[in-house]
Length: 597
Image (cartoon, rainbow, N blue to C red; front, side):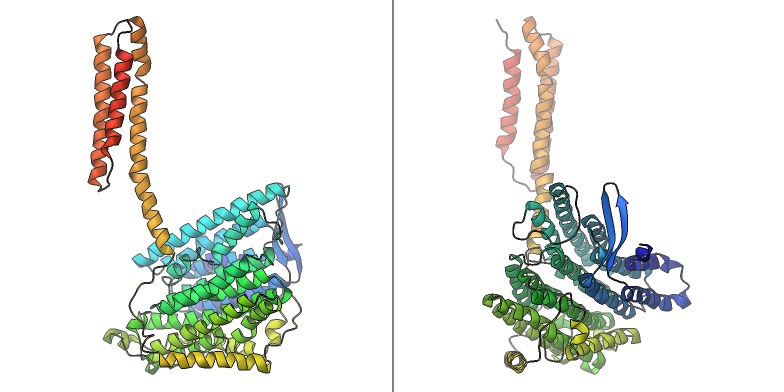
């Protein structure tokens, strides 16, 4: 059907490529027009399968529109509009191109009907999003971007390997649908590994706080919304009811909370809390019931808005002051009151405060856990909510806007409300967070299954308020103990970094040494036929013997030089290796040069 050939992703990617040639006086209008067109296009999509292209023996499906893809496409195109509005004053066309291509990759993955198309857009997301990190142009950003790209490349390789094995097992059928989660194969696990790496499931998660904390102030707004939620969509589509995802999701929810409490950088704190919040969604996918899948989709929808709002608030602080660490901020309420208000609303939303969006989405997953008699999962997810309110609802607003003023004079002088477009984006996101929490049909009617859930019961409201109240009391009683400190928390990225160094050492030292030894052995082995022919003839030509001796001496000298080079590199190598190889050379020489008579 020709209707699909106006793909939402194509509008964004083409719009980004043409951005450079738009006159400066029209650029801001153009920046708003393109995501508006994408949002309108998604609103006009009808359910069905579109954009089928025959490629070799496969049928690529670029457009599968149903209830599940629609809810994700809606919120992601809306967040693209808000994120572009937030960065409207940024004059770096490369950042806008990277952001739009990144969103286009996410939309392409969401509407993909087969695994090859999914993989194409999956990798497009990784390759384009890394520039949102590098565009900050700091040495730390360069390293974080390379680590981000390497980790996602590894995840892409796992995903591609799973797709190949799945295609072989199904006779070439690469339709992207529900996998057999009751009898998973190696292909199933490889595909799931590719998905859960993008979802930042521990221990495959350290790339997220490492990269998001180093992105540009507006790039992090895009990063927080798309990669992990596209992975949640893929898990909903292919792995609903995969039981291993329940404990993984619960671990995520608790793990992210613990590290967020320890974090000193406000954007890294929010990045760690993405792990925690996505944990609820992953657990919901693992539960697999209609209520749980609805809860995962609803929470992804709400999370994109309030997490984007929180990154906007902290990004505004970074943009206006140049600082993002709690130990270098404080007392900014006098300078940035509107930014504080918007960030506070985001903190209340993520903490599942009644009348805010998180309250009507997170509770669906917890209720689904109790309905499935997984009481441990339900209670542990409720426990994670305590940590959420502690650090995001209380720690972030207090220590940035009301805590002790640690600002340097130049930081304090720079502090002010951000440009109008940044405040406008935060205001719209705040209104939507409140609107979703107050008028539940707006969100519930988009969900893939009919919703028979009512969050505003007396029991649920009173239970939530009690949890939040006691958490707030504990925070203010122990506030001196929660004072941020300029520390660095070691995480799983330590293994990535140390593992990379170990691999480099292994390649440059022992492997290279072994290669040198094998090369010298090969050189001597090349002399053996000549020695054997001389031995069979019963005589030796002096020139042959002299050549063999010279070759042996050259080999030993080369090996000695290699060993000295290794020692100069402060690497301890056993001299037994050198002596053993030299002895072997001498033995071969004596053996084949002896007189057979």
